[in-house]
Length: 82
Image (cartoon, rainbow, N blue to C red; front, side, top):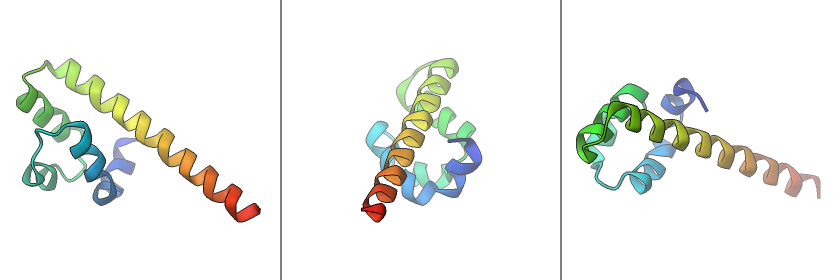
């Protein structure tokens, strides 16, 4: 999943982000609005980690989110085909 897709699906993904980074408030997530650099900056600030670590965490989360989305889509196709 790329940063444009994250922005487009942010309402659905906010819960996942909150689960991953519990220190982020609802206000933080609303201001971030799916913007990758803002998310990285807020994670860096809240968790006291380096920019590189925050970027790594966001990229891993985006990849995992994409994998989960792909698996959900494939499962729905299989159910429909049955």
